Image (cartoon, rainbow, N blue to C red; front, side):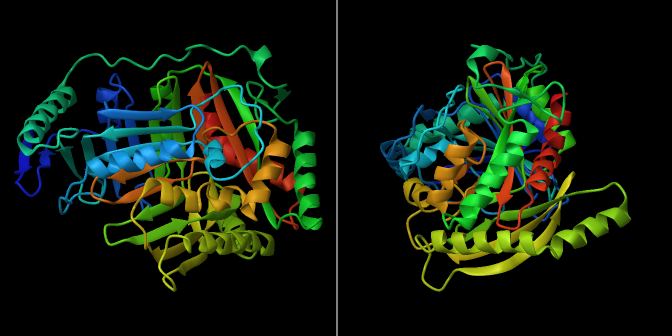
Length: 476
């Protein structure tokens, strides 16, 4: 059922075995879901050019978690990554073991002095798990491997022994017929009376929001006023939808990926909270040759089940001056951010405002590339680019100040990031949009969009409704 595909060597102590019996990525996640901090980096939208590989892991050998992120916590991640370095195993997908991180949007406080918003849920700002065993799924070749690094052991003989033991343990789990234990839905549930005042949502009677429809329309107008007053050029504003959690988080994620497949999807068990994301947006990737890429999304239209209507909606998006201006502004912001870590003259825009289609919406997506000139240090990269400009606005710092003022509640996972820093240097990070944060008895479902001077407040509200559809259908 599992055949040895490669023997380890003194130069590379990584153990790799190919799994030859059929197992889906979600089934592998189910098999490991009882272990601490199970994670699924999920390219569900396999029709997309970026949906080429998925990864499942659990039981990290070390965890760094910070309730309120400090710059020293990021330096700790750097120091730990320096301890565990391994050569690349060729002809396998990029993530071959390493650090999987969750960074909340509110980790921004490490880099800028931004006012604090009300935070009833108190999610951690930073989680990093170091995973020595990974199940790697290649969707292009339809092949699956079990990879075991043997860390945290460093001495070669001890590392080899641990790698073999851990590989055998995970092999047994993948072939086990035991009953799956689902993650409990309510731990330390927050009473509704302890939340900020909730308003009825027009989307569903089972949802509430920190804004009524009229209040959100007024909030968007406030953002537009800030633009005309010269404070900003653009700002991303969101409403936070809430629903009681009715399903365990694994079942909820299964429904989410069926409803709203995306290229940078994630399931991550933080313990008290689970992150369930069907994100289509990449914050940043770095390959082993130091080529860097970011893919900002700005501009959204609903998709139709009728092909002719869909073409009409797409044409409206492509020709929209407002959406193109919004996208181009963020491209300029990101080019500036990337200049802090990329070689001079290496930054270029390889795609500007390209149309990409997803299950419920279609987007304008730009692609910016460069060549990174610094060590792949966690702190250096995040201090340069985090949070992503596409979900803040421009100028970034002033936009974040206005977001804190207008939205009034902490974003938590929304607009943060989940991704990996592989032990061999590869990096990939998403932006947590289309994301449900499950925990403390609730599902948080923030949805938002970019505001520019041409924005129509009512249309911006309707855009948040369109973006919520896939997540709401999964919950109910």
